[in-house]
Image (cartoon, rainbow, N blue to C red):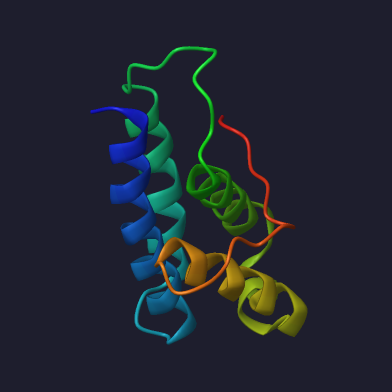
Length: 107
């Protein structure tokens, strides 16, 4: 699998997990397991050091980092953080514009 296909697949999964978490259908533990599974799968992707990022990839890595960095309660209750993450999710789902403040890097 190449990087664009990996990001497309994992972005859909990320949106599913975050929306499920916010609607109390998926426990935070499952979101955390998704994070670690994604990193493990990423380690198996063949990539070149000089391969450029897409905008979608930058938003994906930013979002994944935010989910791991912030505690469960803040992710659920902080209106500013939720708004930022919602903007990122909308972009990943193809329903929004590129969020300029979501710039992630590869692990």
